[in-house]
Length: 169
Image (cartoon, rainbow, N blue to C red):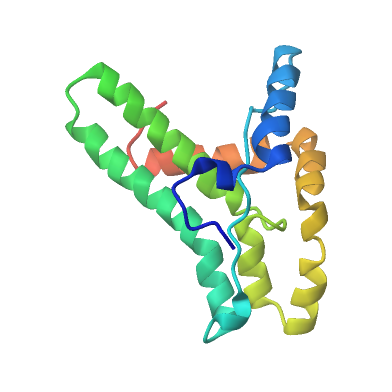
């Protein structure tokens, strides 16, 4: 599949890595609340090769957000030890970005990681029907953003987690 490489060009998606950030930065300059984000090509996974595909799809889906939470946790521990304001600022940003990524990716809209959890929990027939949303997922997410997906779901979860970690805005 050609993705096991340190060459960043192999991970670039024309729409998600180039056009989307340019569009969102332009909209942001015009006053849009959308944060400028970018997407890489999804990591291909052959679920048929997993010993238990139903459980495996859950593990694959939870791996990314779990790593984001672990990074935020480690950064919050380092933040408690940091005597320097610049280091504190960097650690705060690391915590915030990783928690935003973790909670945003847990939204159950394909191809986000939260959809993998849902697919693993649904019966096979419903999981297949649900997976057919994947080609439209990016458009669904962008349709939901103006309705408060980010402000009403992701940000409150991030802020609550930061409070639990003892990180204050």
